[in-house]
Length: 249
Figure 1 (spheres, rainbow, N blue to C red):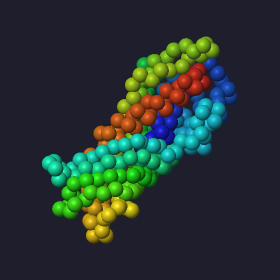
Figure 2 (cartoon, rainbow, N blue to C red):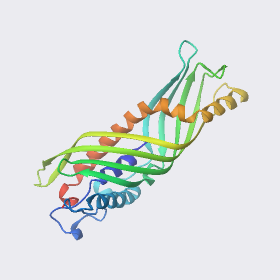
Figure 3 (tube, rainbow, N blue to C red):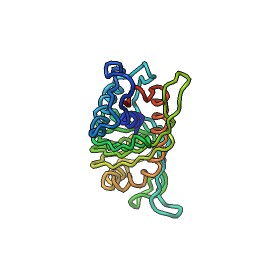
Figure 4 (cartoon, rainbow, N blue to C red):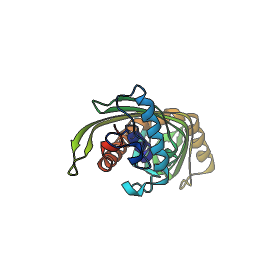
């Protein structure tokens, strides 16, 4: 879930340095690193940047932030030859860019930032293939998956190291990123399944929705790993284009 979700994380670290606020790019807000309310300022800056990211910022190479794409994840329920297995490919998630940063914690000297993010709703689609037995029914097949995730909360952390660019300004190398997330309500299902009768189709969708949180728990380790990779890559792209002097004072 997240190229966009990634964007905002970065922003949260934003705050200015040797320039006046009037010199900051229109999509940035500067904060004073020694101000007692610096974390509140960073939260404001993150949300300001997020609002522009949703529209696109071509000056720094941000144009289309959605969908967030994950190539593939798999789940396994049960063991043995009849255990249920499903693989989801070409996952596309929409709604991530509607995020709000609700809290920021920072160690500016150490260039470490933790952001708490809320996203009202994410819709996802994917192609899926499955095999094995589900609810005592043979559930092998392939088709389309859809999911709606409401009340998404994510905590993201990143640590960076500053370096001087060729232009004499300070940029950041992202050393470490972490993230975790939870979802309050989930609706999901499969459709257009080849060679599957209506009874099996209905039984599968009933099982999927009844056990949505458990299924998400199975998906979560792989999904978290892939989203963290997206986040790391996006943060680095952003910090390659925005010098520290434009967002930290």
